[in-house]
Amino acid sequence: MEMTVQLTIDCFDPQRMVTFWAEALGYVPEPPPDGYATWRSYWAALGVPEAELPTGAGDVPESIIDPTGRGPRVWFQQVPEPKAAKNRWHFDLKVGGGRDVPLDVRTQRVKAMVERLVKAGATVLRISDEPDKGFYAVAMQDPEGNEFDVI
Image (cartoon, rainbow, N blue to C red):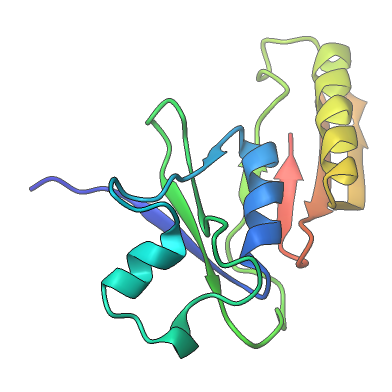
């Protein structure tokens, strides 16, 4: 049996999350299905009631995909309530290169990614700088408060 995986993230503003997480993951906004100019026209053609169609920039995708086809599709599902507690999942963005890469190089790679993501709307929560353990990582939050790590 073939299976694909989709990660669904509840959020208030799908378009903002698409923009942020496409940048963070190196993904791209998912184009609408063939024959449709927009996702909104696709969902309407399927009979989704107007009241259930996304609000705001409804022609902007609510999902991102890995352009290489390796990673899962990520769908940002609009919900009315804000995030209320610590998420029980999180992304680890492993940009350092692993323990075979010198710590100073890994640290610079992490810092560069953190700088990019702050410009894209993320917030730094805490920095774990433990050179005696050969470890450097930054805990962050996306624009809606979901935690993730850059390692």
